[in-house]
Length: 261
Image (cartoon, rainbow, N blue to C red; front, side, top):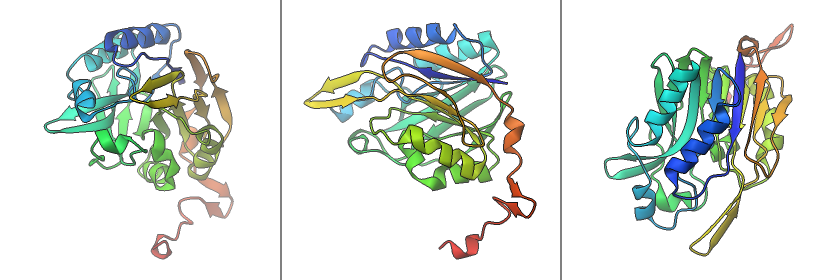
């Protein structure tokens, strides 16, 4: 199957334009699974809770979900994207999954980074693996990667591919994902953005370098640090089924969780 990592350069709060630019880029490459960045349509650098709320949408409503769902149906694909989700009085930093067969999924970021804590409620949904036409897909968002429990939990629950929408500003993730993938024997598609946002006296620059990483820890594709671009690779998700390291070692069977607390 073919996976695509989509790296965007959004303009803060210009939602329709950001969606159109992302979908136009995605139409240049055929894939079974597309992964878009965190908060890809709204932008990231909020200044107030009210601003974040004004750009948030209920899951499966608003502007973003219908546009992405139509693309997934048109391309016979699965898409994972990050968005600001409004649910009652709360706003979450969330990711949605939508497939051409009607499969949908929602994840809310568990590990909020820095000033995100001023604008978003912490996620209240467990890590889930979604059964899609592209295979078992687990979802985490950006800073979740820093906690090894995130990918381990998804791998233990049967994920073959980790969709990882991100807005990375720290430099560590691209070189660390091979370790996360190797220790869990899963593929990862880390979709980051580029550009900068200077708002309310806070300036953030995003590192780009979106990446596809194999279950053996190989960097299959890495985007530039500066451009909006899409990269595809053909992978065999079934490679993630085996956790066998040697004839006598299995990465999961050899775990000793009774001693991990």
